[in-house]
Image 1: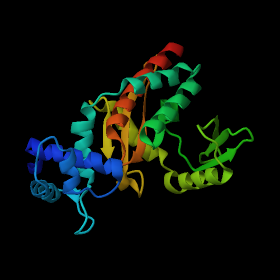
Image 2: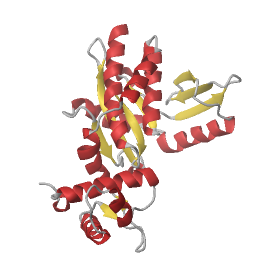
Image 3: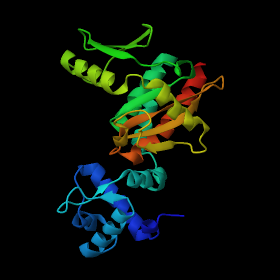
Length: 275
């Protein structure tokens, strides 16, 4: 049964508008801000009453008495499941994704393109998990800058097993920036893989084409502020893997959800052609 504050269409729209506004601004949202974008003419007092009901229902909270409201994990979950999933990917995004994949000539390049696209659409971390790598655990990461601007990323697993990639980022980074990135990865994501793979593999068995999870306590201490959007893909030999994005809960869900679904489709098609 739907949560009581969401029984009325007006309340659902106000909540959706509030989540969108907060994603755009990052600031607590006032009743006045909602009234400016709401499709019906409602007084700020009416909107405040609805926001109070939504707060009682666990969808909003107020940082302090003079501030507007901020979405909770339940609000993001509602938005992702009932609003963002109904959106469609723009023609421009579809063309851009197809262009990115058309330039790839082998499985490694296809995977790198997928990770790049997923990171771009979410401002987060793009992840592609192929079945043979499902048991690999990240112990340490190192990143070096090459003279021509390319970047070498080395991932070290327990026992000294290493995997390295040479990437050409969209802009030139300093070694100091890369050191800070590696330090962040080592601090936050070391030892993630068995926990993260478990979460990602759940999307393969899910009846939903795209799995959205708000709050990732099971994989990180900072998981409350993270969201995972993932989808399964298949290769020509029928083996399944998964891909997706991990980003802040304040991400552009409408674009990210549809982009993940589309990337999974194009990724599967492209892999099948070269398998």
